[in-house]
Length: 463
Image 1 (tube, helix red, strand yellow):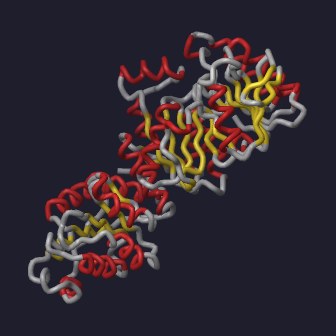
Image 2 (cartoon, helix red, strand yellow; image 1 turned 60 degrees about the horizontal axis):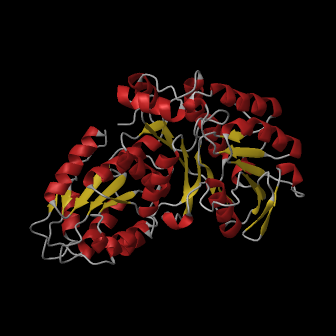
Image 3 (tube, one colour; image 1 turned 120 degrees about the vertical axis):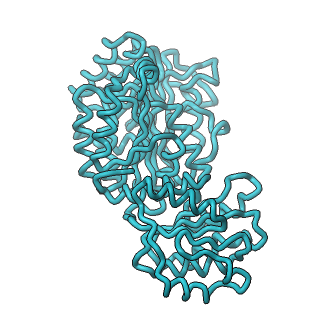
């Protein structure tokens, strides 16, 4: 489905109308959306209810046609039966597009209503997100999520855009990425995707200058749309991370009742994705890790990693994980081991293991880790550095993240850090993340990140 209409107006509307606000219930989804956009976003916002009147000191219009100004985006939150006529009125008004958050369509047995939305949209070249969705999140322009801002974790602006069939999964992903210091450019919950599906959104984000990484939560494709999606993905210059549900009989039933999706055969899906330019994350943790590292290094390609660690056990686990991911852990030439030894502190020269993984031991100081990172940043047999740190070691300070960033800033080689994610060590993690270095929750997470960078080079295999 390709729209000649400018889909960007869904994400950057100059004016917004919310249809379905309640005159008595401030917690009605439409009221939450109206208040949020009126107070927190730059877009001029109006509200509509057939009864008219006033709420919050603002005029309530009886219909979209009664609003004197031009409207770019309409959010529809009414009973499903009313939606087709509302869309026709929006088209007559010259509205650029609509988000239909209303439910009770195909997922509830009303395929006729959903088909009518599709017919209206295609006939009039009128882009529609939904139904049965949260819609678009595009600060500072608009947020059609019917979730109170005070209930959510603040999300910073960034270069990752997310497409999701599930609104709940989308918000979870955004919160988890925010907790990792990853900024969001835009997000869209497509729900039943009667008109605009993941392929249409992919087409948009591929061209969006504010998006460097595209993350997609997928339940299933509409008929004949899977092949089109993969074709679009293979022409992308931006990394695409996919996580899919509906892998089991129970999961397939769940997605069918949730957004009326056709989950299809997962094994076939996975094989097709593996042969494409997409990277398939196997779980939420891997999805977040992949988006985080690709946000930091969207154009990176790696094959060979150097692991620098304070613990031999951590280094061994990371080495095993890299082997499974197809990432080489090259041996360090003896001449380089001798040179590096000369750069280390006297307390660890005789006990450090320098054969990769580089085990600097629990006696190492900041200066030792910095010396090792800087040393391997200039070696051609290393594409990426994995730095595995333990903040409870006596020689490590909270300055290490910023100091590491200073010596790696001039190099294009990615560096991935591991640090336990608990509140007590937040200052260590912030030192890295605030300086553009991604930090994994676990050694496994660091391997996920390295595998994603390998995949982001658009090779023919992911793991």
